[in-house]
Length: 534
Image (tube, rainbow, N blue to C red; front, side, top):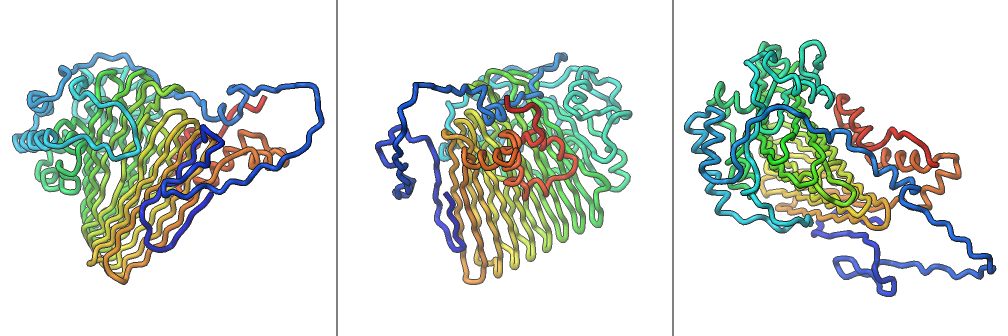
């Protein structure tokens, strides 16, 4: 089933679920019945009763989706954790451990009071039990801390952890073309190529170090794009964030290498609340890569991050993410709650921000990477693939807020739902009266695998003024027996057929990802499959 429109759209939803009562006609959310084609009756000869039963292990699509999560190991190193619980004493402990100035502690305490004044949001499609914030540890870090610019005092088990993740940190093995900030639980343990970047004027370090070493820069931009009062989880993050990355690219500078942060959760009782702040000054460019994994614990853990991007005149930030948090087991037990606020501001004229993401992990994903197009002739882009399986839930999308004249935005979202999962795209395109001649193109496509998955789409477009130009396309398709039979007739096996269809479906987004993510994306999406149909 497909639907498309090129004018103003009100929110709508398309949901495909297995009909529990075939005698009743299923209805869409707007009250229109689905068109049903009656199955023709055929006379059949009476044959001996022969029944072929296909188990889940024999189903090639199920085998395709039951891939092993290879990052689920636990590292055994000594760590220090503060007591569980959330109160003002927790906030002061985190600030003291980070050796922060007084203004940073004031920022945290004000954010905590904002958090206490808000109620948990309940409007998303995600369903989960209430979170007990008093049962979470808000700070955990390895006991051995490295000296500045040295890995000599890092626990070898920590280095081995990132080696196993494909992120070598020591000088002999580390990536030569990518600077990496490695964050585990609540602290950054190393930042590679920091000195080489600083020679070009590019500041790249953990945000804890930036608060101490570049307080004026951090204070100028922290909370400017995502203030603590923006939403419930942004307030929580502003109060308890422990580490994350900071990058500042000065005027007339192109970062000589891509920068990257790899987030790893290891402690079973700890949530992760990182803060990322990237500032591109006039006529500068930087490309940022983000990756993340966690052990396969049988209980849920909270990850509530905030990312702020700020672009000055003629600057550009390209932000790419491969999200691979643990998603829970086949029965929906365990996994990460990934509640993230990501937003960029194109403040200067002719600035540009691009978000590219591949979402395959987390038990629940709740995020909307967004762009505020404030300056004239600014550009915002969002390219996304979200894959859910088993009992995963994803409520994700983007917001493009047009304020500047001749601003342009492009949205390409691909959602793939399998198993009993629910995948939701929620988008907002808002064009203010000041945004004369603004343009937007949105494409929201959903693919269903199996009979129990759900795909929902909620696009909202708000326009003020007669000059904007908007285009919106949406489609929903399903991988079924007919498509697989078509491939089989041509000698192509089930697994390769599914991989081919998924690869073609996601091609527009994969082409936007940096080469450094190519092999990881292929593995995550099972485009390179092993084994054959038995």
